[in-house]
Length: 26
Image 1 (spheres, rainbow, N blue to C red):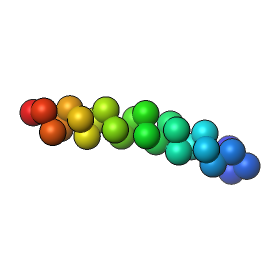
Image 2 (cartoon, one colour):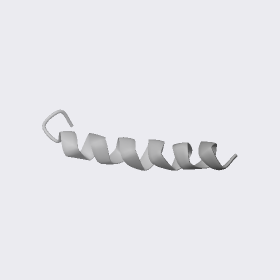
Image 3 (cartoon, rainbow, N blue to C red):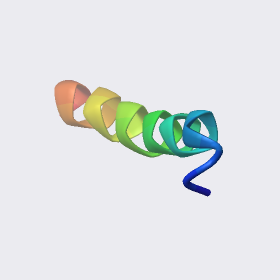
Image 4 (cartoon, helix red, strand yellow):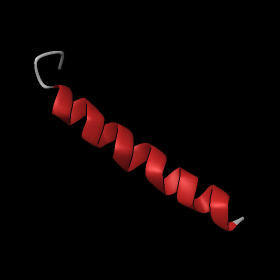
């Protein structure tokens, strides 16, 4: 995975952004 940082970033964004959205709504 180290050779595919974009995959890590995409997973991070897919995991964190929804949580931030939920946190901002609650």
